[in-house]
Amino acid sequence: MSLKQAVKSWVRSDTPANLSDANPERIDWLRILPFIGLHLACLGVFFVGVSWVAVVVCLASYLLRMFAITAFYHRYFSHRTFKTSRPLQFFFALIGASATQRGPLWWAAHHRHHHKVSDRPEDPHSPRHGFLWSHMGWFLSRKHFETDLKQIPDLAKYPELRWLDRHDLAVPVAYAAALFGLGALFEWLAPGLGTNAWQLLVWGYFISTVALIHATLTINSLSHVWGKRRYNTRDDSRNNWFLALITLGEGWHNNHHHYPGSARQGFYWWEVDVSYYVLRAMSLFGLVSDLKPVPDAIRRARRIEAS
Image 1 (cartoon, helix red, strand yellow):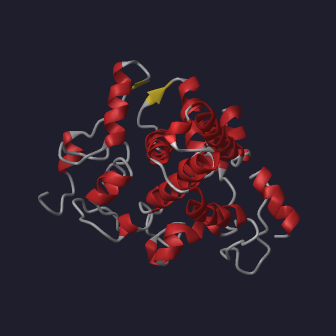
Image 2 (tube, one colour):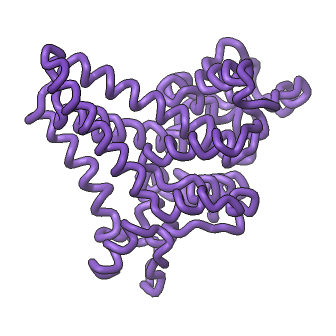
């Protein structure tokens, strides 16, 4: 891909990838320059310093966007495990887009394909292809750049979701700018807080986003090699309590691959699933509905260990 094509792909993600290369799985270094820059920008912490405000904003930014990814990008858009209104659907798609993990259509399409072929040769991010490939190499390649609309006909009918998918850098840039503005406002109105525009940009966007991205990616990589298997699924998925904590419940991955149709991934009370708890709270206010449960027969089926 030429530099001109790479820049175009940053602005519009529906720019066709160049697959004429003999190896379409080769990493497209020009196209992923923003991803590399995102990581390098974290080094800005050595120049902006730290404050308690910056740390709180960083954590809040992480948790809010992780919930949007786990509850909506994953459990709602990918698996349709509950219902919500169209405005709320767009609102959380917007927050999810700010996580800088591409648009909701691209995310859901790849995830649905993953479940159909999990840990088989066609799986785009199986650790059987190599750990680093499963963690991030797959989405940095040319082959997996485009959105397969055939996987998501139910979502592709929404023009607002197609726009988010087509301009998947617009929301992250706007989000970063908002954090920069918030830091400038704090510095002006409450200088005693000890923060400023650049500090909140680095902590609230760059550090928070990099941590968020790699925590999410552990479910593709580590959750298929590290943990326990309760169910005899056709893949290598595993349950991992630590990954469940940092991803608000996604680490109960063997549970999820055993029965992906449930809104909860921690099947038992001791399996902490924060995203599900928040969805339950939202259902009390009518914001979401029809949270699909785990049937008892499903919970008992295909067990390979008493856990």
